[in-house]
Image (tube, rainbow, N blue to C red; front, side, top):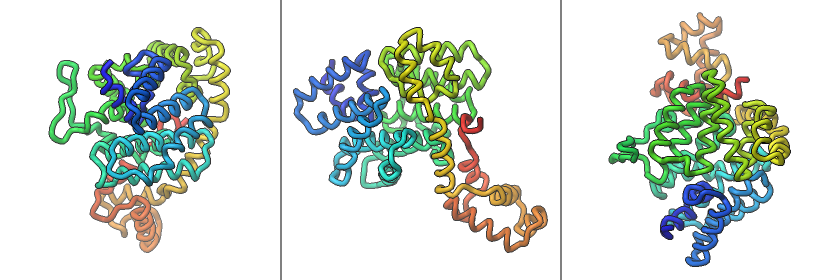
Length: 379
């Protein structure tokens, strides 16, 4: 195995995913990473190994251990200067902390992580790769909390500047950084599935699999199969849904990645998930039940709190904006909604402030950013 490639894997946002691409299972990946860390004796390798263990603990359902590993890396963020690898690793730790918001991590810690990712996404002093990666991880964090309106338009529209030629990616001048492409495909497919565009999501997954042959990577393969199952479910293709779900659960059972399927257990039905899981690992059903219990309730509560904190538009503000988008004047809107003209203007000012826009922005584009909701939150 190429040592340079292995070291690069240790220095990425999620070395666990990278490791599962190089090796066929988590045990081999950890042994390989330990070997290269011993040889290189570099701080970045040691940090990468800690981050690898953090993600391994998280996917396995050991939230407390994952938090400890992630925070160990994240707390050193203020000491990072002009070091892309350190930024990338700290970003991976921050994302891991944000994911724990849904599993009871105290708000102060995951909010710190959220702020770090948002700041890094805008920081012109760091590399383009870092900024793009921060935007992608910020989008995935937002989607994990069903805050779909925070996903940037370039991710929603899959504006990556890349095409597939003979099974390989071709990059143009303004293409996404190659190191971010796999994450970008996953993020785009996830967004499209979550907002109820299953065919478009399946097309993105197909393109990702053509370029990356992702069935070599257990984690990506598992997530994509779960997304495919969700997409097939939306299309009422129930046999295909069960086939993809079983492929994902089989992989999860072999690697003991209980948390991945536990977070989706209510979507596919706890009984269905446990029935498939018991074929491959009976002990896994208890682990999945433990992690799934209360998960959706916590997520719903957290989502409602975040909607209030993020100043979601009121129904009245939304009605006024849609009428404005259709060319109505404030006087005409007042007549239409039986409101005083001053009240309409007040609602308009509040809506503009909440959305962070001014009168020069196209209202329809701004509303398109706001009016999206995760399919599974509508149930």
